[in-house]
Amino acid sequence: MGYVIALANQKGGVGKTTTSVNLGADLTNLGKSVLLVDADAQGNATSGIGIQKSHIEKDIYDVLVNEEPIKNVILHSQHKGLDIVPATIQLSGADVELTPQMAREVRLSDAIKTIKDDYDYILIDCPPSLGLITINAFTASDSILIPVQSEYYALEGLSQLLNTVKLVQKHFNPDLKIEGVLLTMFDARTNLGNQVNKEVREYFKDKVYQTIIPRNVRLSEAPSYGLPIIDYDASSKGAKLYMELAKEVLAAHEK
Ligand code: ADP
Ligand code: MG
Image (tube, rainbow, N blue to C red; front, top):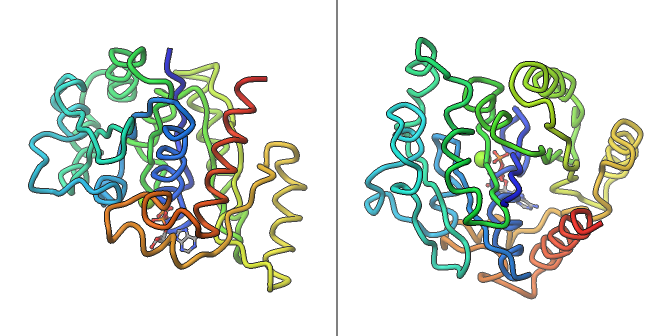
């Protein structure tokens, strides 16, 4: 049975999509089958693994709003073992359209249940908000991985995020866990990075991964080639550290 992880932080630009794509690709290189669910209207995970907009007939919007079977929406990527439920800008209307509908919080959960056995891991790349799409993602997930940018105000907003987790646990998904907290875009040359590292570890304790993702220009170039970092520049620091993360995630599950 597949294990579902939502990558979430309502702040934009903290590394959710970069982590979804690269953790996903690395897990396949470690022998796991992975479905990436792009739940952001920006569609950055979709384009980031090389899926062109013109090749998308149906997307996650159709699954959430029109109850299209998720099977019909899944596409294979160029990277072996990595499939995707794509997103397009169409998704930006979903929050409003779902609001008056029945079972609006469990749409994604119901859809994912139908394909859970087909994958080892299902990673949901959440949008930068705590709205209905993120609630759907949390309701559908076993756990949440929180990327935190090693910057000023890194912890800001995280108590709101944890409140949303509590609400979803109370109403829809009592078993929802925190998978881990990942420091991203770390710059060891600054005191700030080290200070944020310390603060995040004080707050989240052993939930914080040992692996820290450095700021690495190759990581920011890879999406424009539609490639995970491992396929774009396997020798880069970014590639090495995302592989370490994937091993750490697997090790935690094999315990
Ligand atoms: P989010 O999905 O949280 O909005 P992204 O993963 O899209 O964040 O990252 C925001 C931007 O920062 C993107 O342009 C991405 O390529 C870049 N980026 C992400 N992680 C790194 C990193 N470790 N080093 C350099 N650039 C990064
Ligand atoms: Mg994103």
